[in-house]
Structures are given as C-alpha cells and as structure tokens.
Amino acid sequence: MRALTAELSKLTSLLSFWVALATGLIVPTAIAALNSVSTRKEIDLGVETAVGIDMGYQELAFGVIGAIIIGVIAVSNEYFTESAESGGGRQITTSLIAVPSRLRFLLAKATAVALVSAVLASAAAVATMAAIRIVLGEHAPEMGSEAIPRLAGIVCYWVLTALLAFGITVLTRHGVIPLAILIVNTSVVTVTYLLTRLTSLAYYLPDMAGIRMFIRNLEDSTVEIAPLVGGLVMTAWVAALLIIAAIVFCRRDA
Amino acid sequence: MLTIHRLVKRRGSRAILSGVSFQARPGRVTGFLGPNGAGKSSTLRILLGLDSAASGEALINGVPYARLRNPLATVGALLDGSGAHRARTGRAHLNWIARSAGLPRSRVDEVLGIVGLTDAASKRVGSYSLGMGRRLGLAAALLGDPEILILDEPVNGLDPEGIRWIRTLVRERASTGRTVLLSSHLMGELAETVDDVIVINQGRIVADGTLAEVVGAHDTLEDAFFALTTQNGGVAP
Image (tube, rainbow over all chains, first blue to last red):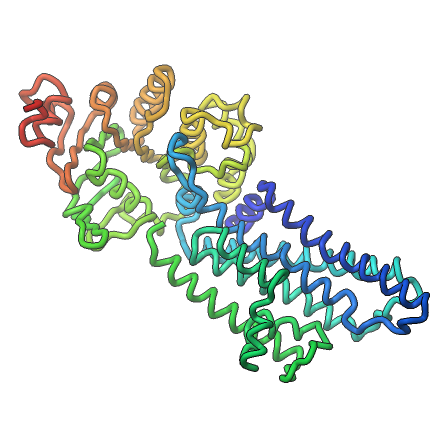
C-alpha cells in the first residue's frame, strides 16, 4: 500500500503525467465533437439519417494514446539519466533502495498505472459521449443498458493498453521507442490493421482483439470475435508480457 | 553492522570483484578507498541489493538488504548524483520517498533543513547544481533517520563548506553508535574523517584496519594508498 501511494505520488508530480491526462481527455472529446458537427450538417441536409453505431467509440479507441503515455512515463522516468555534470544518477536506484522487493515495486507501479488509466478512461468516455449529445441533441445515439458493457470495454482497453506500454518500457528501459511505436500504430499507420490484410491471425494481436470489446462494426473484417473473447485475448497478451517483464526486471542489475 | 563476505562479480568475462570481504562496525566511520573502477561502487550496489553477485554475501545486520523490514529506517544511502528525476521539485522527490516508508511530511521539511535546501525545495531538480543535487541525495538518505549510512563519494561536487558539513555529520552519526561506510578516492579528505580504512584495488581488498594500521610506516594515508595500489608506489618513473 505504501509502495502504491509512493508510485501515485511519483506520477502526479510529473508534468508529463498531466500532459498525458489532458491528451487522453481532450483528443477523443474534440474529435467526437468535430465528427458530430459534420454528421449534424449531413442530417440537416438530409444526406444522412442515422448516426453510426461506433460513434464516440472510434474516437475513444484513438484517445488511448493518453493511457499509452502514462504507461511509458511511469517506467521511463525511473531510467532517465542525469547529465554527467549532475552526477549521472538515475531515480531507479532511489526507488529500489526505498522499496527493495523488485516484485512489490513493479506490482505497485503497474497498479498505479492501471488505476489512473481506468479513471482517465472513464472521464474520457463521459466527456466524449457528452460532447456528442450536446452537438447532435435529439439525433445522438441512444445510450441504453446495452452501452454499459461497451463503455466497460473502453475502460478495459485503456487499462490493458497502458499496461502493454508499461511492460514494453520495462524491457527497453527507455521511453522513446515504445512511445513512438505505440502512438504511430494507434494514430498514423495502424501496422496491426495492415497485417490483417496479410493474415487473419493478425486479428488476434492485442490491439486488434481488444477493440472488439467496444467496436461493433469493424470495416471489412473477415473474422468474427465476440467482445468477451477479444478482451480475453488482449488480457492474455498483456499478462504474458508483464510476466516476461517481471522476470527480466527481477534478474537484471538495476 | 555491515558484513561483506567473499563477493565475486563479473561483467562479461571481466572480473569486477574477486572475493571482497570486510566489515563496517557500529560507532565507527569506515572509509572505503580505491582508484576509480576498483570496485567500490559495485560493492556498495550489491550491498544495497541493486546489483547481484555471482557468489558471496553482503549483509546488513545479518540479512540481505532486500529482506530488511524497514529499509529506510535501517540504511540511508547516497549513490550517483541526486537520484532524483530532473522534472520533479526537491520536495516532491522527498515526498514520494517518505510515502514509500510511511514517514510523515514533516520529516521531509526537517531533512530539507538539515541539508540546507529549504529555500530550493520548490525548484526543479534539473535546475540544481551538482552540490545541491548531492545535498538532496543526502536528504533522502537521512529521511528515515537510519542506523547505517552508506555514502558513495559523498564529497563529490560539494564546496569546502559542504565537505566540512559532511565530515561533521558522519562523525556525529558514528559518535551516537551508528555505522557509517563512505567511499572516496580523496585521500586527504578521508584521513580527516575515518576511523577504519579498507583499500580496494582491481576488485581485491589490499588493506583493512584502523587508520593508524593502514598508514603504518608511511607518512600519510596517501603514501600508504599509492604503495598499496600501484607497483612503484605512485612515483612517476
């Protein structure tokens, strides 16, 4: 518990953490608002009559970059090396002197990342859906009880993606590479999606399986995966990665 | 009490430590002396559970560091630099360490006062000078008011006033029955401060005893050191 509060204290005292929170909150909300404005125009012109089933969820799938940044910086800030003039120290030594059990340290850190990602995902989902409601008014998609598992899916997806970023950064000990790869894959070129053109096995990669938890209409998908199965597949990937990361971290010199 | 027993450490095919053994006793300041790359930092990192040894033991009051119940109340350690992330303020750095040990926030203000960083506590560590960073590292080491202090090159980057302050601090700690182990390559400084001296060279202990024993027939600790660590006694050919 002490190790967990220490980890939460570390995160919240970093400026980059607040940037990540703002990114996760503003990006999906803003994109959803913009998309809603153009949908509204089409409805008013009579071009479009109904709102897409994945309205809001697609934007939230994109907003996960906020959770990615949190997962990466939680680890990379430990390994940032001071300049030689400042003595060339790293925070990881201080951290492991304060919490000598490697497993307890890693568990506390992962829990802190999961907690803040869950809170961020919930806030982002509320803000995104509210933005759609405000812009579209009566045309906004109805939010009944069927939305609950999908919104829970969003929270799971963000938490699992943050832990994926966390596990990769434990292995690389450097933030730039995991941050670049994961953000590019989420936003600019979705490599994992392109891979599904080559083999349908790529639908079982962590992000492609994970989005099944809340995306209902995946474009020209040849493989059907139930939401729960998608979530379990992503969980299995993340669990395997975290186990490898923990073994490496416990054996390696700090 | 710190007990190092036959530590062996290799990096690749290179031997870093080849059977290092010594003790640091309560109520005494033990100086750990050696040229750069002799294995001082490696020994201290193994003692603190940061690095693993191929064989041998490094024990704190009879147990490995990782098994201490209250690590920060038992051992305070200062390694390279400040050990803090540059984007945090000095106070935020000490706050999270205090939380990890369940120490009150008032203790953070106390140690900031002890090391003379109260005025700089709200500044980011990235703006600190080397000396201020070392003071912050020392503040972290003193946070749990530990019975043992392990300091790696503590006077590096400190001004004369800071060096004098460290000397007074470690003497005070030892006089109240606590254990202090400090490494240095600055002979003159060490001779003024320590009770016992351990000399390490190329991963082996080459001298171990009280200051008087290690200096022996030599004029100064420096002369003794060069006689022990170089083949020609440090005299330029």
